[in-house]
Length: 95
Image 1 (cartoon, rainbow, N blue to C red):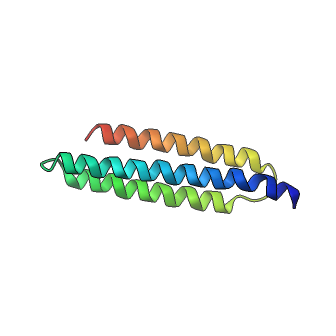
Image 2 (image 1 turned 90 degrees about the vertical axis):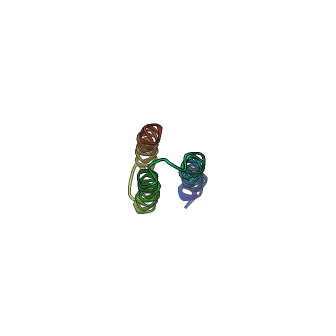
Image 3 (image 1 turned 60 degrees about the horizontal axis):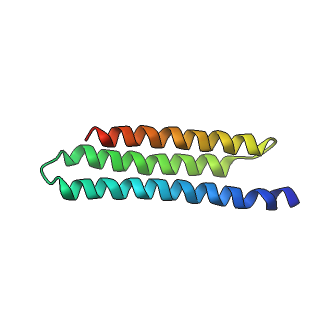
């Protein structure tokens, strides 16, 4: 039981970090849409949908973690989070 209590803040912080990153990304896309009314809004909306799907997928993975070596599993999820955010940012730069 003590081990679970020690890992809970880390899990909470990871979820919060993912939430903030995805929220900031979506906000940036909305700002881009406002400043580029003649831009391809279909592409930007597709990026928003992809960001939401990324958030959902990461939360499912976090909530499904169980068993041994929890620390390495959460590190892997955090690494995936970073990689996916980098990919989303590259796509948004191409707008």
